[in-house]
Image (cartoon, rainbow, N blue to C red; front, top):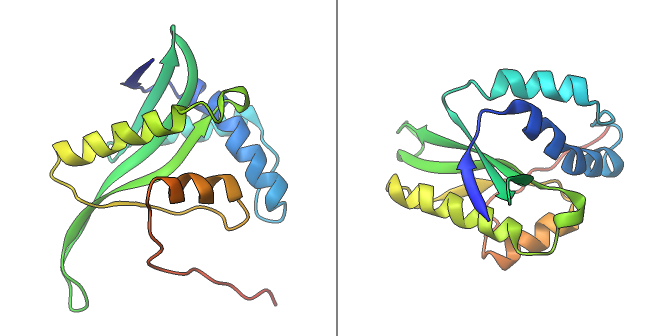
Length: 153
């Protein structure tokens, strides 16, 4: 196993298929069906943003997963103190590579990056019906600190 930074938006777009398709199945009103050319172009744009870090997980030079993170500085204001976090935008694995510990390897690398940058907080969100994500982050001892709700009219 090898985890490395990548700017290869085509591989990230391909690896995004499973997680995007899951979201589209769970929330068809919110998510379009996976469309590789559109997703590829989106990642082509995103991958050049210096705020974002894309890490690729490979096994024998075969891409099997990725994590997309961002180091965020929240400045002090009248309501809160300043702080930094590593925000996990997405973590994705090929469908045939789930439940093998690879997500944990990716998150361990996220923790390492946070520690190297003296950051003590990892933030993320996931869709409510994504029970796999809920269980994964529970296993990694993530805590709820905020609820996001909506009302459909």
